[in-house]
Length: 229
Image 1 (tube, rainbow, N blue to C red):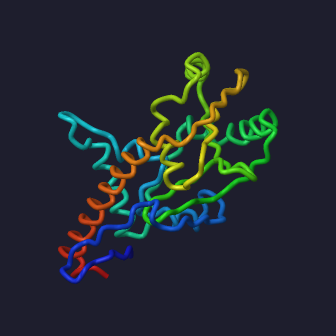
Image 2 (spheres, rainbow, N blue to C red):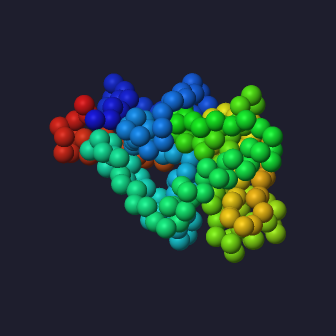
Image 3 (cartoon, one colour):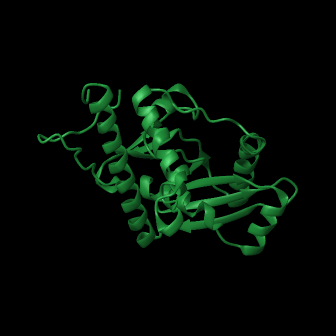
């Protein structure tokens, strides 16, 4: 069971901001039992786009609500929500190692795998870490038409900004090398540095999301479980 920080008045205590808590680097294999346990019930950078998602009249979206309930379910049951593989995710897993090797060769850097980075109640699973510098690697496998769009635009696709800047927010690192890969097309590499105003805004959004998630958990514990445990 997830443990809440409750003050003397029975209120959910505000969690410290991600930059106020120490970074923990968990040396484990991604998708392992330990990896699942570490990320259970907390928002992670790969889903920060859901955290900031807005609906009509600039209200929180149904996507945001569903993600919050997914994490709440993990907290209450102790079971990580299932992630069903799709052809796209299967392709991504298969391509990631090829892309990582190609990237390391072309950039003349040494990279290493890393399981999970956790800072308080947020986390990130980087695809790779660059040895000797304050940099991470985020790899995306693209279909040919999408890879061509990335190559022509020569920029980080907007849909990946929350994840990339979120990884920098959680890790405290200086940059992410964004790698876009498609077999038989040129490899795309773009170094993305910290965008501090965006990170400050994103941190506020994630903190608010966690406060709401904690309040929902407290409500469920009080109503159905006889109080927080």
